[in-house]
Length: 181
Image (cartoon, rainbow, N blue to C red; front, side, top):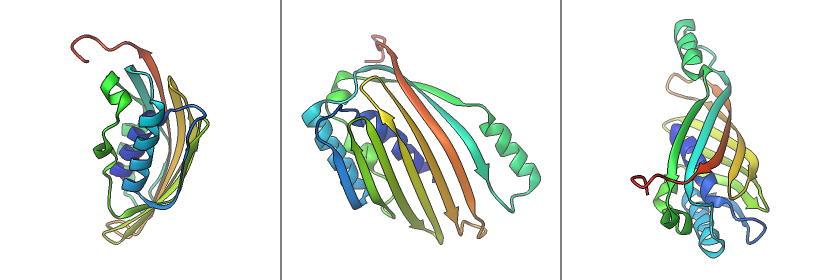
């Protein structure tokens, strides 16, 4: 699940391209979607290079059957929004690294639609006896994006179900420092 969320979070900032070509994939692998996003990004440019700040907030997490102590510990761990910063160089903005999208081969997008500042996707993953469904919907632009995501997993290690809702918001906050770029 973590790798699928990371794939989505990394995908978004590389996809900001105004109202030009769109990505509209159905029943596609993570690699196919990544290649199409990279293709559109090369032809239209991507996000603006610079220092980007991303904030991830877990809005809801449900894990029936988890011992109360573990549940309380997880709630404390995710109670605070997590903010990170990273530098996007001009080279990265012009040509995203397709390896960034190398996710789990067990995952497929039912649909992945991105264009005109909006994104909508649903992905299913099956591995090690568990089935995960992830959805995302949001907006993006050259200087910011906002995304709501859900994840539902059934049949995990102990046969338990788990669900999570999260929000990711990012914005360009300035130029990279000389040592970052």
